[in-house]
Length: 248
Image (cartoon, rainbow, N blue to C red):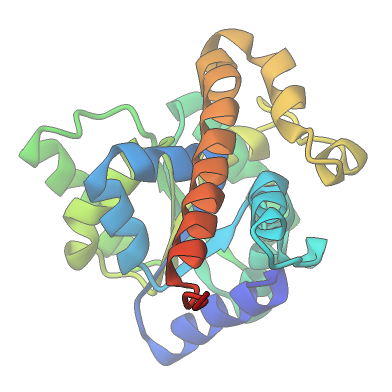
């Protein structure tokens, strides 16, 4: 889905009072879906799982379907459009995640930039295995009754939390946002468009957070490439097996 179509789907859910979940596929989430069966099932169960990576588009092209760059819906590009829609329609947004001080900075910035929308939030540093702590967070969200809930606690923690509690959340759209709160607070910088369009955003982020992201990219990217190569090899072998025999 392109960014305009995702924004339209979220907007429609808010206006019509439905509930949808917007997850995303990048190389890291693809690898997680191969390692964790529950994660794969979660991505298959959501209403939207958009492409969040040039690497995914390149893999799709390698497998035979060449899609334009318009189908890359990274949060750097998507979130401003979502927030503009919220400002236009006076929607409310609840952010769940990040450190308390970073969350507060992000909320203050958003309130200044989008004065017609309503913003609230809760930090992500609570015990997600504690039923009482989870219930307190859910009650706070439901008390606000936001149109959109953005959960930014990193993969796969955020997906696990949403999978467990989505039925209890009184919201119209749940969006999995990763480090989006840190970005809006200015703690994590956005990748320049030129680098991102070349498919090198992973390298940009690796140079800024090498300790946290080294394993994800230096091991994850080759693992992803291997998955795609094996898939193509298996597909070619299957096509050969299904070819009709030729009589001598």
